[in-house]
Length: 45
Image (cartoon, rainbow, N blue to C red):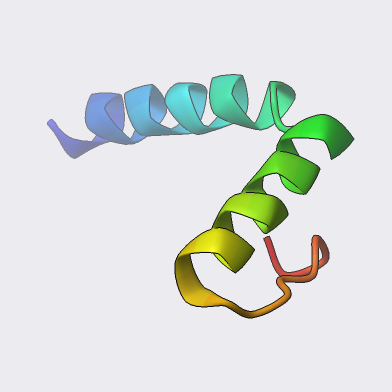
């Protein structure tokens, strides 16, 4: 049913969230600037 799907999605999201640190946010900001030419704030990422 939908309950087990929701549980799997929540677990996946929690797992990914654990690995998003300041280094990842900085790399993401640099990559976005390279792609789009604008400064991206880590607060919005």
